Image (cartoon, rainbow, N blue to C red; front, side, top):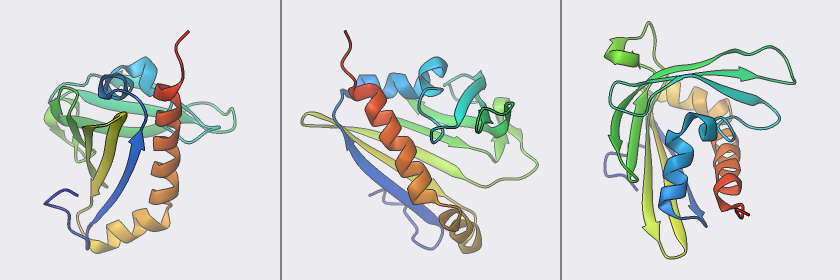
Length: 159
């Protein structure tokens, strides 16, 4: 677990994915691939502005039950260490512009493991109340579902 993990303010989820780290990385950094797994099905995701570089935008929309797409996330990539780690936050918009409000900063870590990739999502909040709200909104179910969808996406045989 991350050394900076604070149980009062942070949530974390891990999963072993039976796919090479490069495949998981590509699913995270290629907008068309990202759209395939980022929100829990049957909802659909659209990457509106997506550039996996420091300061790059991470702007998505969501369509639930076939409805029109609506804003979902407006965030900024802070750290992009190829095939190893991504950190993004909604405290900043693309280009490091301050956002009007913030909910999370997330660190996604990909570690090589025998037969695949150890995936960790460490999600930080400003205080205990915000952390608790995220937990009540279904952090573990939602992020768990999305990571499961990511695993299914990258573990699928290519033929």
